[in-house]
Image 1 (cartoon, helix red, strand yellow):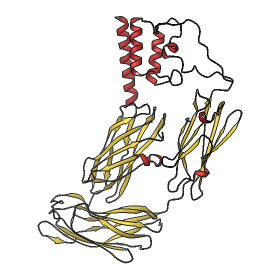
Image 2 (cartoon, rainbow, N blue to C red):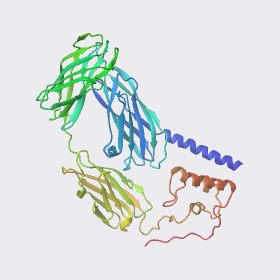
Image 3 (cartoon, helix red, strand yellow):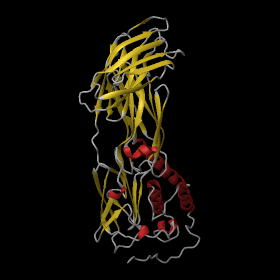
Length: 487
């Protein structure tokens, strides 16, 4: 009975330790302040991922909806192909889902960005931006708990009187952006409105259209031939904007960036007429917006999630090598990919068409299977990879890992059973130190030998045999184990 209580004590301690380790991991969203009509990207980060991340589902909501709205979500480049999000129709919340197919967030990652959420200030005040983790699973496919750190968003005070505000934003050359037309508040609701907006510098951008989030009836949009002015009109036929509403986006003005400019160009509200539900009609005070157009410098290809990891020590002399190669705007040219492996005795080079190598354009994943071509490495290995994009920008990345030297025997082969590896004194029983060793391998998810892990059911069976003092194996030879030394 005393042994049973000892086991329970060990398991409870392990559980508490696991909980403390889990909650030491924190997922947080940044706090920020901005002016009325402006937008900001709030990064969501995890401070540590000792076992990496396989996938996660998050949600973000604005506690005071009239102060800010969620507009967009973006992801780090190598995660983008396996990420999606859905913003609620009212813009108050978003759900985010990501699968780390390329092991970008590898074991030991720290201060890692999971996603960024774009919020727009629509009314003056302060609101909590609440973050929730619906599911988060590590690379061992084990869900775990994390602490949450919510953000705060402060928007500069709105004018006391209802005011029509054009937003502030930026756009890349060749891309489009949606700039909001915001009504800060309304006393009598909104039945219909008309507005005309001009971009002062017609050479830097062009109006290409508009969207109406609320006003589905009698929409009118006209753009001048030069694309520097847009006129809007719409009617609220379903009473969507009622008396007392705050921070209402009447329309989204869509512009395309044409020419970069450092100082930006004003978006001027030339005229407006707003008719309230009580038939009061007239112009409202206005606040102009600003548009900045920038050109993104061509960045070279970037490299993420190398396997084996940097400074990792392996037990296999023919490891499976993988690395993600991504580029911000341009396609990576497969024929320029070159991986060099240099160990104590040889230098090997692999291109995308080399034996054992492959390039997955969809996943941006370059792979070399050394085992398939019978290549063995020895000792410390320096890996260097390079690649170019279509504009000629070249990226390079280097990391190191270690494999057994050629003259050193490999680890015990997986032909040995878990029981044989744990029975260090050869008595066909599990002693106290041996069961503690088994618990250590089980908790850390480490392999006893290549391909041999202690799963939950096996751990329970081992604990049962330890408690009962039962034989580990039905029959056990007392001869020492030997294995061949490679040559």
